[in-house]
Length: 451
Image (cartoon, rainbow, N blue to C red; front, side, top):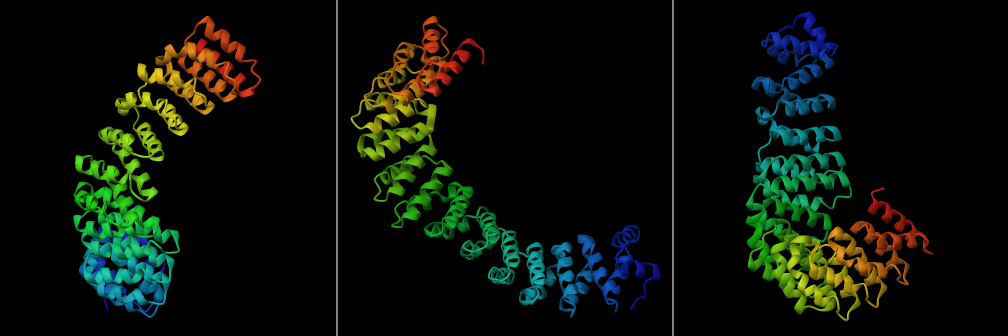
């Protein structure tokens, strides 16, 4: 053994790591002396020499890694743990330590198993040995080991796609930290390769919503290469698969005619949740889905019509072409349909005369909820709804307090400053309903610029 100078030996004994590293900066040959001192009979010197070599990172040489590997079998558990940690700090040049680190996966000390899986994540390539070792660690009794195993698997990249089913199994782990780490790993591996698509598609029928959510997210990140498989999945007999495929297609926002026609077909699915996902998908796809949504309005039952109208509202101003059809539906015999149309006309066709005329008509509906919603929507049109002022002034006398309230708010948003409007609002300040009085006061301030 090469004898260290007393001063350097003392620094290692006293854990003066900063000073030892400073000396190495000035004279790199000291690395070899530190390597030799790993064999010291004094435990603190052994420990700190291994620590120093780890702190060198990529500057450490092959001789250093080979020496540290020897101490992965040390009788002292803290030495074994520090050896595992230091190899991780050194990084990929320490890949010759993989077999020895794999052996530590069964060490009785939790912290050693944790250190080993962390280091494997830093130095491993997606080899069978690494994948199998980390797969085993996913089932470890210790939460931290399982968590770090998932994180390390996520670092292996797209070529480790075969591990995705194991990570999905671990998404059911009772510990939330483990489940989160598995979710991140699935995304990290899956989004980088189209090879993962079949595995991910098959996982859309998983009974755990957390797994399905992560799978959908990963498929969405892969993007258009998933589309052919997703289209096929729209016909799957499992409702979870159909729902997952719909959500993913919506996220990708691919709107070719074949996809839109397939989604349209699912608006009549036997499962209500699938029908809802189909409507949501068309809403998310946006303006390109408007013709499909309009076709659905002509052919579906009332419950689905309401859902479709709501979806159109979610598209917003891009859905102006629906207004003509809405002008007919505002007189539909079904109250819920009229209500949803009144609500949606506050989101589409702002300032459009046909839209305004439909809402003015709805101010006279026999149902107060529709009159209320019509007033609210007219307010959303702002100054573009000026022609609705005469009808709104009449609605200020409505027998229902909620209609009067929303009408008062609408006048404040339209901001037409005339003597007739101000006079009507001043009268409303004395309404028997407190919140109508307050809304009238605020409306006057808004119109007169005293906000």
